[in-house]
Image 1 (tube, protein in one colour):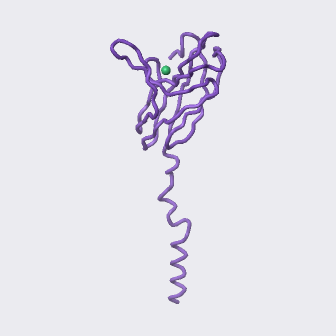
Image 2 (image 1 turned 90 degrees about the vertical axis):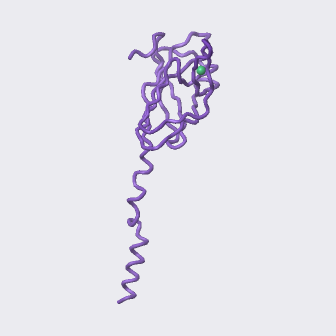
Image 3 (image 1 turned 45 degrees about the vertical axis):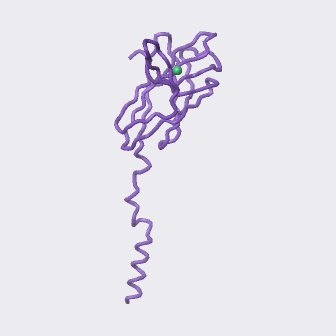
Length: 154
Ligand SMILES: [Cu+2]
């Protein structure tokens, strides 16, 4: 009788259901939402363009944007525009942290995804993919809308 009871306890501990609740949801807590990706149309001789968008961290963990890729240009980088002594400069950013419940706005005069040496001019109404790589959430591909000269109207 004791032997049967012990066998039952061992089976219970090895059961796949025994600890399943502990890790549940862990992979779904990143909750990054990327909205309104857009870029201005370019002229035929324009070599670069800046993509703007919003990244909202709806999850409960800090995540980091660690890379950007696109076939739209030879070089694709995360940039930040900053004013230094009255002059606007752009800095290349390698890692951009996004805190839980924070929305990071990529907008003119601030963060942007810099496309350098465009593959083709960007025409109004076109849409092309850009992939953002995050440390925890992995790769997220969004479709960027090419707007007119006025940009994206709010
Ligand atoms: Cu830039």
